[in-house]
Image 1: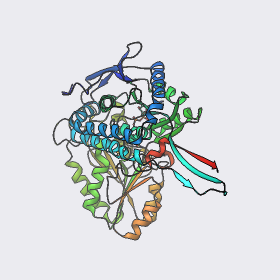
Image 2: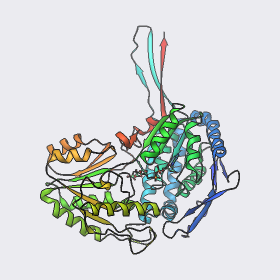
Image 3: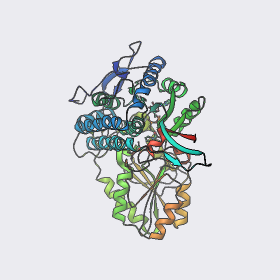
Image 4: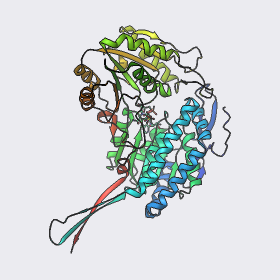
Length: 484
Ligand SMILES: NC(=O)C1=CN([C@@H]2O[C@H](COP(=O)(O)OP(=O)(O)OC[C@H]3O[C@@H](n4cnc5c(N)ncnc54)[C@H](O)[C@@H]3O)[C@@H](O)[C@H]2O)C=CC1
Ligand SMILES: O=C(O)[C@H](O)CS(=O)(=O)O
């Protein structure tokens, strides 16, 4: 087990109603280190009853929390941000230990996640309404915004810190108490956030963390309990659809940050070195395990061979290893299933004509490490064209015209992130407006920030996280009509 040098942040209990507690039946589940499968923690394996308790605690905490002034909530969020920044190293170590990403990347996630807390500490004070000119001489209309109520948040393993703060910072800022269910693979980061939330002064019941190996049971309670007014989910499209269906029974508002299939288009007027740099950043971050990773790389025919070779040269320089070691760029995949899926994608692609330019095998380190890979001659018959690879594999496709690039890029039910490199201003506007995605990176492979509205369209979800728009997901609008 890694030396988690701050025992205060390394919690092995769930956090409900301001108490650190075990499961009612004292059952636990193991959290394992993805480097060597060693057990790093035993956590409460909770179920329906504990989830109900957490939801009731949040419900009971709602009136006092929403009645605090915006400035009071803002101050507590700001303190929480300050604590996260103070403990960035400890939080990063916990994250790398349970998720596997390189420590510097983990610390980057902590800073990114904390930036949402900082942002919404400020936005808490800007939840403005409207005054609307009356529709009659004796009428006056005022629009007010109020917190929606108890929020249930379910989050994935690939960004165990930031996917929580990106969701609950706006909820808490708006005046909503939250019940969080992190992934069973990476719950420790959520518990460390709860410890710092307690230190920051969040009242009991406002921030609750349920730990469980049975996400289905917890999810059913969160999506059907009438005390929960909002479900916010980040994860696969498949699970998002299940949760949306379950939430419909009580007509809960849902925010869904789901899967992606990002195109990364390189036009013949692109700066190829910049495009390679952007492709490395977008494709291989978190070992390719992000929803906004470039999933399909398209290079215009005139620069195809040059781009492939430059990309492969850069990929060969990526260092694979234990995320705790310095200069490591690529950690292990989260589990054996993930490794098997990546192997299957590459085998299928090779059978259908792909050429391995570099990588293409399980890494000699063993475990769930995979070689950073570049495949040329990719085509639409291959499985990895239509599914999230969620691994360090870059298939490169050829295209001839701008119109063809837009068409193939849009040929997916997903619509989260997209990227392209080019310099002609008319081309940039035509392509940016033609891409059917929630986000477009233009001459950059890194687009995620708290100041912008992160989210997708089509089967990549609904709702936005970050920016001035992010808080709207946790607000209800009410208008007051005054007869005078
Ligand atoms: N759009 C975005 O911002 C993001 C999307 N994702 C997507 O998430 C997927 C990878 O993350 P995973 O954790 O493997 O996704 P997942 O959908 O398997 O799990 C996500 C969360 O849902 C829980 N869950 C699973 N089945 C459930 C059920 N039946 N009821 C209730 N909860 C359930 C899991 O325990 C976990 O906490 C990829 O598709 C990726 O694209 C991941 C991160 C960000
Ligand atoms: O894929 C994810 O989990 C994140 O949304 C990616 S990012 O926001 O860190 O870019």
